[in-house]
Length: 277
Image 1 (cartoon, helix red, strand yellow):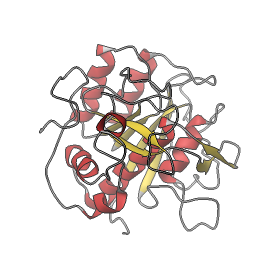
Image 2 (image 1 turned 60 degrees about the vertical axis):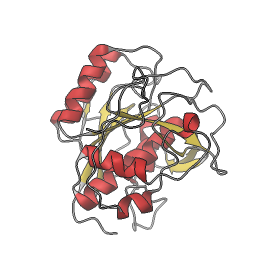
Image 3 (image 1 turned 180 degrees about the vertical axis):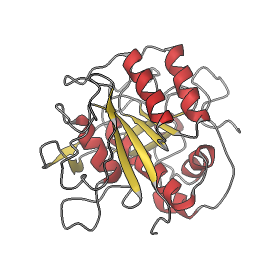
Image 4 (image 1 turned 120 degrees about the vertical axis):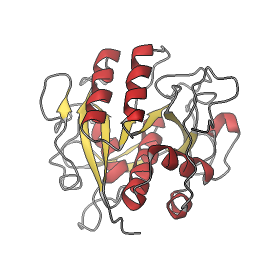
């Protein structure tokens, strides 16, 4: 499939190395909530890893191809410092910035056990603006819900390995909506090179790239995209481990259904996996 449209993934992270030869054609100027710069530098490296998984360039004779191999742009929104840590207030500002600046997908490759109503409010704002929201469930090998993965409107992503089993260390439980490969994923690294990375943030980047590619190919709404990803996922592990299953991009791309869902929060006893919108 060659997408007829385009989509933008806001990578809320440590920034993105915008000069990387496998990203320079797909990265657009964003912002740093921390210092007001354009977000196109990454002193940690984590954001550049996720950007490459989601949308590294294709057909340029270099490196790798991202999941969103065509029609997908990366908007860096720096909300985490060089040490990889951040505050709810900066993340909230980043979510609102992404929504206000046309992000079709918002990728949050971080997690925290603390719930923030203010962050849920920002997520609701972004959802109502039409964005698909994706977050890592965390790498503590725990079933305790984390946030924003466990929030209403957010696809919480667990990580699988090469055997389609829950990856070692991946969180599981009520915050998981869907799973994706997140073990030894080869991707772009800050400074122009490449590296292997593992974890639920890598898995979340796969889902974000998939959501963006569906958007670029079909122009579907956020609720329809979430439904297509969930309805077409492959069985893997248990529901507690992978939610609706391990993402299947090929089948999700081919799906033309218009059913729309919005994910409920972990506080819903009826399960966060599906809530008809």
